[in-house]
Image 1 (cartoon, rainbow, N blue to C red):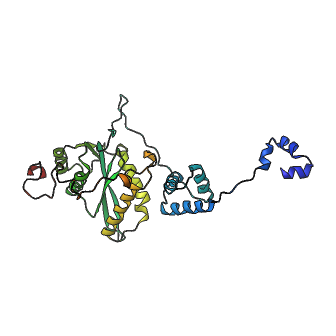
Image 2 (image 1 turned 135 degrees about the vertical axis):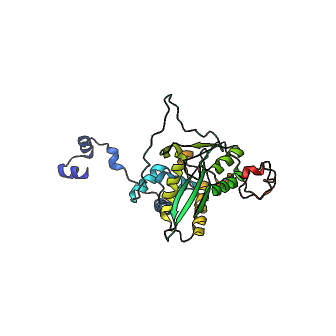
Image 3 (image 1 turned 30 degrees about the vertical axis):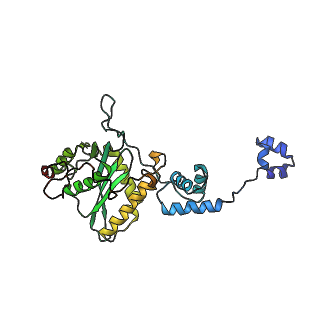
Length: 299
C-alpha cells in the first residue's frame, strides 16, 4: 500500500479503494504477547518429551500446567517452530452383518469387555521380548503390561488373575486366535470364573480395534524410542510408561482426559480391602481349598 501511494501520489483512501482493502488494515499494529517466548519454550519442551503428540494433546498438557491457551494459538506456534503433527492412522473398515449390525460387541461400562494381545520387542542383543497387553475397552485404561522372554497360556492366566483380584471379573474378554489365547487351560479357567471369550475372525485385526490402537501407541510413543539392555530394565520402563499412559496422557476419545487420573485411582491391594473379596482359581495356588472354587479349576 505504501509503495502504491508513493508511486502514484494518491491518498490512502483512494489507494485502499483501488486495491479493495479496508483502511483499518493500514492502522493495525500486531501485538506480541509478553509470554510468547515462555510459551514457545514450554511447547518445545513438551514436544521433546512427547515426540509423537500433536498440538491438540500439547494444548491439553499446557492447560493442565496452568497456561490459559487455546489450540489455535498453540497450532500457530507449533507451525512457526517447524514442528510436525504426527500423521493420522488410516481408517479401517468395520465388519458388518447383512442386517446392518456390527459383529463386534460394543463396551457399555467398565469391566464389560476387556481385550488382550501380544506385542513383540527386543533387547539390545537381539533377544526377543514378549509383552502381554490387557486393556478395558470402555475406560481405555491399560490394566497390565506383562514383559517376559516367554509368555504361555499359564503366564496369561497368572496375569489375568492378578488383575481380577484388584479390578474384578470382566463379563467378556476379546482376543485373536493365538495359541496362548485358544489354549484349553485358559478357556476352561475363564469359563469357571464367569468370563465369556470373544475371538475375532482370523486375519481381521480391526475387529480387536481398541487393543490394536493401543498397541500402535505403545510402539510409536514408547518402544520405538527405547533400547533395553536387560529384561528387568524393560519391565521397569514399561510399567512406568503404563502408569503415565493411565494417569497423565490425554486421550482424544475421552475428551483429552487420561483414562485413570491419579485422583481417582482405585486403592491397591494390601490396605485391608481384599480380605473378603470374591475368590477365583489361581494357577499357582497350592492344593487345598482356595476361596469358593474347587481344585479342579486349576486344571
